Amino acid sequence: MKSIYFLFCAATVMMIASCGTNEPVAAVAAAPVFSLDSAKAAIEASNAVFMESFAKGDSAGVAGCYTKDAKAMPAGMPAIQGKDGMTGFVGATMRMGLKNFKLATTEVWGSTDLVAEEGTFALNDDKGNAVDKGKYIVLWKQEDGKWKMFRDIWTSDMPPPPSK
Image (cartoon, rainbow, N blue to C red; front, side, top):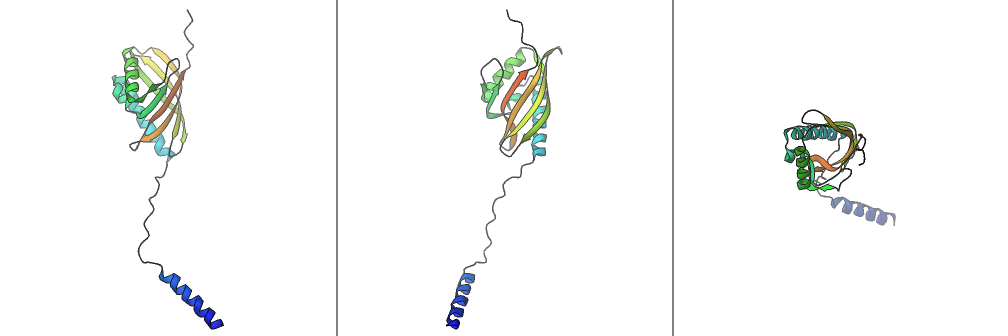
């Protein structure tokens, strides 16, 4: 009886062992590795393009820093959506004589899907006069392999104009 049991176990082990193949196992595609430092560097570079484009009066260049489905949410007006909306809004701002837009990032955090940037801004007219200053939060997401602004909201530190 022991010999039958031994033969049965040996046959089972051989059958299991023969089921393996020598073909390589397909490599599992590695998920891209997220680096907050790389995201910060990309945000810094995009902000530089934003500020340079604004100074040149290039509203399309500024809008290129946003995703196709971006939304800006300024105080006191409806949200602006998409690149066409951004181009129009920025163009109107530039036609008002606003020329110098300075951004300063204070903090960045997030993960693979979404990164948040917190910072301050200063806006001057074409004569160098201070027009506005305040703080902002931007949510960034990747589009076509680049970090772009997805949601943009800011508030002024300036007091509201006197009521009439």
